[in-house]
Amino acid sequence: MKYRTTEVLVGVVTLVALGILIGVTVNLKRSTLFSRKYPLNAYFEDVKRLEEGAPVYVHGVVRGDVRRLEAT
Image (cartoon, rainbow, N blue to C red; front, top):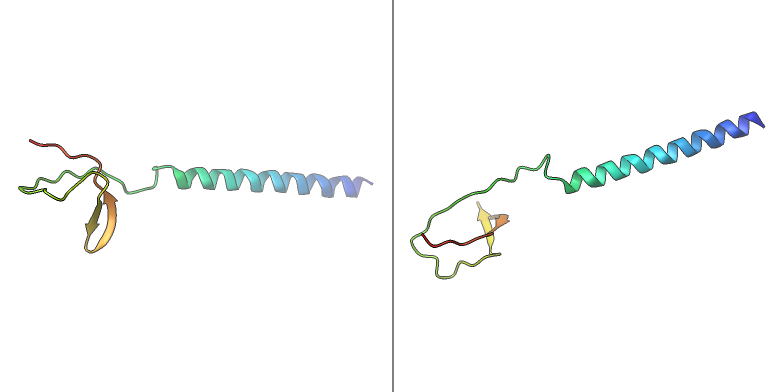
């Protein structure tokens, strides 16, 4: 019977460890700790069609969005 108890204990510990690993992975994916996000300020003479939420393209690839427009 001791052998069976050990198997169950190993199974429970494995499931708990797997659950913790999945939880940590999901939280790290959501965090900005490893992301390469940074604010970028740009100045334009004419912004007639630019609006907040518009996509920002770098070399034809969407790399972000317009967060704020400010007149200076």
